[in-house]
Image (tube, rainbow, N blue to C red; front, top):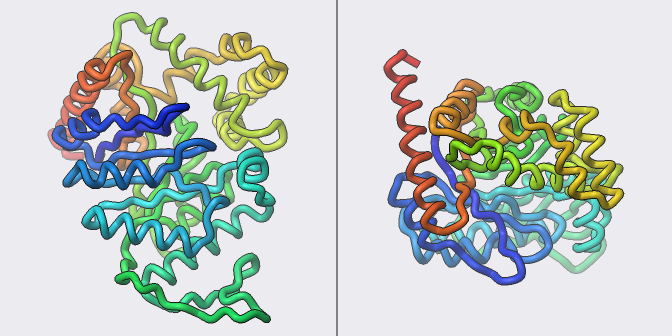
Length: 352
C-alpha cells in the first residue's frame, strides 16, 4: 500500500501545516490531500505546497464540480500540474444538494450524468483536442451562439490521474468505468464489498479490472492505551457525518453506513442531530463504527487495522494523524509509516 495524508480544509483562519507535510514527504508518504466545503478551497493550498515540496504528490480531495465549469477544471489541473512538475492527482466530486444549491446556486440534478460529462470534457481539453462536445448536459460550443471550439494553449497533459469521490452504487460503478482512482469515505474494510463490488462492476464494463483503480481510503490514526478516550474524541465526527453531511432526504454518507449494516444506528443518529441534540447523537454512535472507519488504539490495534485495509485490497491508505500538537501529529506520522512497512514486510515474507 502507498501512504497518503489528509490535511482537510481550514476553518476561520487559513493555516497550512507545512512542516507536517514536509515531514510526511521525508518519511516517504506518497501523497497529500486537501479538501473544500464552503470556506477555503482545495487548490490554492496545493499551489503553495507545490513550491515547498519536491516529491510528494498533490491531491484535491475534492474539487467541487458545481463551482467550476469543466473547462475551468481542466485549466486548473493542468496549471497546477505544470507548476508542480507533474505531481497532481485530481480528485473530483459532486458534493450534495445542500452545498450545491445553497452555496453554489446550481440545481442538483442528474449528478451522475453531470460527473461523466465533466470527465469527458476535462480529458478532451487536457489531451489537446478542441472543446467540442455534444452531451445531454453540456454542449460545447453552445448551439446557436457565437462560440467556437477552442484548443487549449496549455501543453497537452492527457495522463493526469483523475480520482472520484463517490458513495452511491451508481456513482461507484461510474468510478470503476472512467476513473483512475477512488477517494473513499465512510469506508470500513470489514464491509469493503459494499463499495468495491460496484466499482468492479463498472471496471468490467470498461474492459478493466479492480486492480486498475487506485483505491484510496483510510481515516484518523492515533495511538493510546486509553482507547475509550480515543473513541470519545472521534465519535462526534461520525455523528456530524451521519447527521449534518447532507439533508434528511440526501445524505450519501449516512446511506453508505446503512448499506454496511448500520441502518438503525445511522438513522437514529441522524434523527437526533437534525432535532438539534448533537450530544445525544454522538452518544448513539457505536464503538464498533468508530473503530472500523479509523485506526485507533494501541500499537497492536493500529497494526491490525492496517492489516484489515491491506487484506481488503486497499492500494493507498490515506491517514489523518491525530494529535493535540504538531509534535504529537508528527510522531504519529512516523509511527504509522513504520507499522505500514512492518505489515508490508509480513506480506512479502508470506509470499503475498
